Image (cartoon, one colour):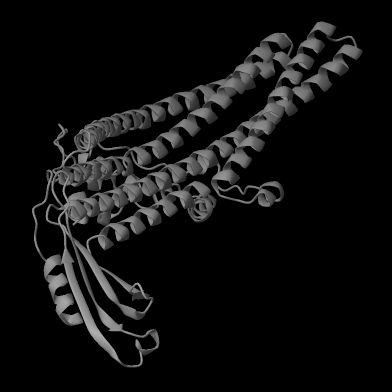
Length: 470
């Protein structure tokens, strides 16, 4: 039999369409709300959603994190591993070609004998009559989708954390400026009252009260400096910077909190199709698809397997003649059937295990979808409410600044004592800090909404997972 005859036979075997064991994947039905136009949410779901804040330093940090962050590099390597596993699974469906050769000597009782040598190619292939390898390939592709979705999930979480970390740093910078400005005011008050006390125009009680108030603000200032140091190092880790860069290079600043651009208010309703594109939802569905495919692969173990082996080559009575002449062509085609008879319940238990795994992945998928809608609803509510909270704190700060100006004039005119001034000044400091924190919450709620809606996807991400595994 010639090589081309063997190849034609095995090619025909590859095309034999056996039955596929196990259920075909069907997307689970989930009770979802009515659809809302996803185009209304485009500002939250664009690939580079952080650019909506119009801060070039933030944009630069996001790009740096996407290039150097270690968690993202780990997730990308796992995608490469899953893609390689798909190649392994596909290769299992194809014939294997190897080269084999042997030489030996045989004789009788008197010791005479003859050397026999052979060399040739061996092709092996197992008929996938029950779809075992096709199901395993389907499972590998589904795991690849899950790995890609996990990478996207890490990417989305990373970009969201970079934005939150940057906003927190800018909020701490602003609060440090507030504390420093207040400390300067208190230091001036201490200087004035020290002079008054030395000249007998105030009591020591008033002087010590102002000194204590100054020390309190000074301590608050130092605590803010420490928080800024921690925020900077946390950002450098997210950006993937080296230990040397963490020590030597500072963290750049861009827009102030007040200058940050806020995206428009969120429209009414909830876009179900956007939530289906969330990376964690796609990851859960990929794992569900893999578990479904593994049911068929495990069920195929009940049925016999048919491995084929074909070989062709040359044989010679002498090793030195094998490739120079004096050889004859040889070929062989063998097939055998192996099937389970008794395995102590192993196959049955394996089938129960993969079915239980599918139930687990189904529950995980449904829970992930529930969590996606919860996070989206909470983010939409927070986005609206935090804006109202910021407006209230901003109004409070304006009122307290006016109150402080009036109280300061009364204190200078001797109409009230210093205690009243310190109380108003402390309330103003608290109002300014609260306004800064409210602005931070307002910005973070936008980030959370982008993350809850799966920000960072494009039109090609809206694929059918079932179609992509084919």
